[in-house]
Amino acid sequence: MYLGPIIEAFGFNRIIFASSSPSSAKHDSVPANWYELAREAVAELGIDQEGVDAIFGGNAKAVYGSA
Image (cartoon, rainbow, N blue to C red; front, side, top):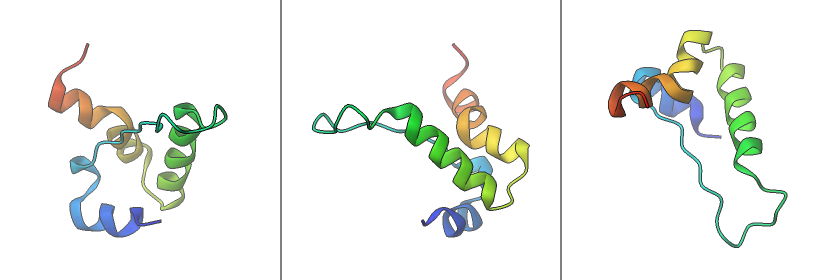
């Protein structure tokens, strides 16, 4: 994956996770699966919990406001 170089180049405070399943995707390809896979991949890079939480919600809340 390209996550390591992306996080190194931009820092975790400038990344927002987003996903969208293509309409042609099989029913077993659900966004929750991609979310967990991506979250595990970021955590495996050694990013601390604060950084993981920022990428997977905190940064979006900061940019778009909380709902």
